Length: 103
Image (cartoon, rainbow, N blue to C red; front, top):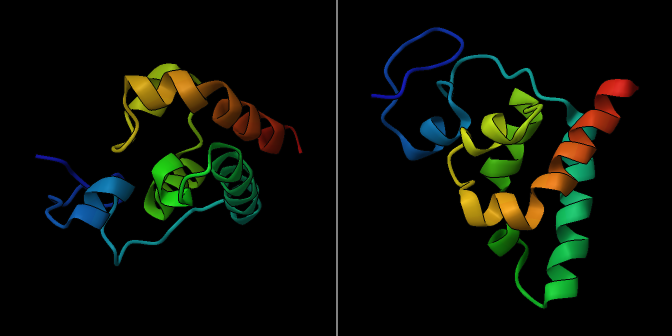
């Protein structure tokens, strides 16, 4: 069963599982990275003529901005990111994370 990365409690709610933390545990989100990810997602969704959530849901972007994945394995460990999305968007997402970590 999935467990909270902050307090280690079992997780059952889908949003909590996606974020890998209890909804009551503090968030360590990088707000600027989240904004950058949302801007990137909007641009990609417009290019593909699909709704933004088709690229990634808000919860997936929040999970990325909280966990700051640094490689493909860490990225696919986030629920909602599988092999297909890794192939399509992985390089862009990891690039955005790396840019934020430089600043």
